[in-house]
Figure 1: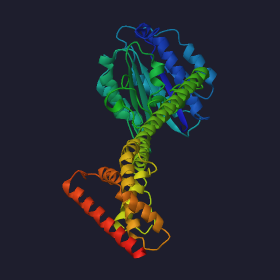
Figure 2: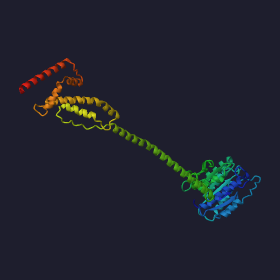
Figure 3: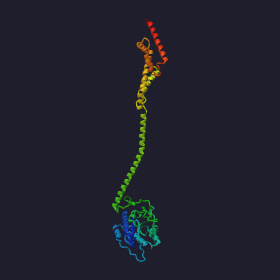
Length: 424
């Protein structure tokens, strides 16, 4: 705050005995005045404060805090009201304070009057107060009014006083303020966060703010200049201010931890669906890979001098016998069931191949003896019937087959006779 000379005007009328403020209006007024003295003297090293009670000047503006506090606490005798005398002549008190500021020692800095009003202003006209306010504005003197009790009667008149003296500071803020304090509230608690203590940029609490031109300019923090200490002046009560500061820091740290935990929980929730999707995709790929059996490479047919159909038959037989790697157990069981039938077909194919080889053998070869033995076997009716019975769909008792066999046996006998004649 800039350099300032301030006069504190106290109300010492009989109405200050009332107990609607704890403990009385007078003591509550003294407590609030102590707060103002500390705030004004500590705001600037050269600021001065004076005290007056009604029209009586107790101490002129000075830098000595001891004199100021002595004057405040020495005011124990209340003014006796005579017949026809006003309980609190506000206009006269303001004129006395204005003269004290005019004769101040340090002419630099601004001038301000803080007026406490705790008695009714029924005998004072509004025009008188407006005139006093204009005179203060003309002399560049700002005024702050603190209303204690009798608010229904005093507030409209005090507002006219403040409006008449109100001006604008360099930063566009009002220079005069009105603070009304309801009954049961400590005036020092209200003033601690009011623009009277913190200047024109402070805020007035809604419960204690005056109306109209008495309100200070808004826009500041609700706790004023001591927001770091919970709105308590550390110079007035260092222990309470430090305790409030530690409590506020702990609460701020707790809120930060809670916000960080909530952010981490939201982030984990967003990551869980993506991770489950990746796992499901991997599982599907694994299942599809396992479901596709590996196709075995085709087995080359052995070159045994067989025909094309027989070679394909042998190749199919070899592929059916082999079990593919990775095939399900059901396919293996089916292959095992089909193996005996295929084995029987294999025996039939082998017999047919043997017959074909024997028929294709050239005469005079080394296998002539074996062929003769095979021919003797085919001449045996029992062997031929057994061979024909093993073939699927062939009835050995068919008349056509029996007739063909008889003809074959006759041809063989004729050939044997011819061979015997040739040898002779």
